[in-house]
Image (spheres, rainbow, N blue to C red):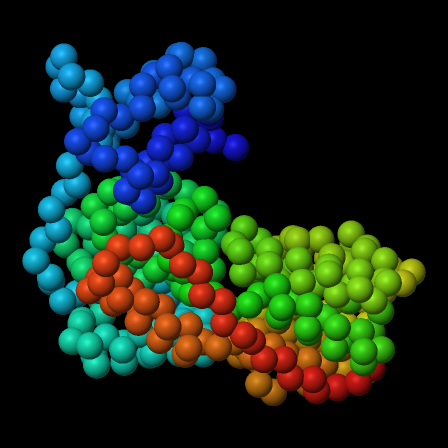
Length: 354
């Protein structure tokens, strides 16, 4: 958890970005910060001093502290920055379809889409965001990396009033627009279908573990298990990475699951790349699919078309890209408003019975 003074800075910055303070009126005082947040004067002073140092607030001698005037937006550049996590592999058809739809909307509306790859790196994502601001883009589409890095850059985006829409996943700590799939419903429905097909021991295997698309899917998965009256087994439901591990460690984990006294009857993989790694490891271990164990996948973002699956989810990839880009252009051309989160339905295909 961030230090108290940073939490106060974030809360005040969000309120400033939302227009809750009149720049012509004095800002909240040190005492008011202490009373509102229940902190010491030292903490309040540090939060306010940092906001002054960052240019969010300005002090006027003999008058008080005020919200700094917003930076005047440059004339339209006609460029939308699109910063994506994983451009090097395109994350299968999922990200490719997102980008194709975003580019089509941009072309129809007279915008140029400028792609940048964060490559699973928080440092590269931060650099891409800062470059986008420096180049005066009209807006930013962001498929974010996992975690909660560089909140100060997002605060600067808000302060400069550059519209930003997140795609596929959102940052709970960043109040901005987002267009996502209904990942909670996805986790619930695919798990419920596997249970209906006769599976009571379902092991989940993940790639990323610190993004909302994953945590929401896990929440839906657990909800389905509880609804069916099945025990929550930590060895089967733990939110742990699989596909990023080196092969020896992956196979050790997999062997441990399959050799347990009550092994899983189906392996539910977070995405197609996890599924491909699991299928390869099962082949090396001599485990037959689907005779010995079945496979299922929570999305269609990887190379598994030839695998026999117990079930798979179908993401609204193109619709994610289209709706996110349309929302961003609406923000660019229209009046400001509170952040919105659009949640799109997913599909689930049932393929094999136990």
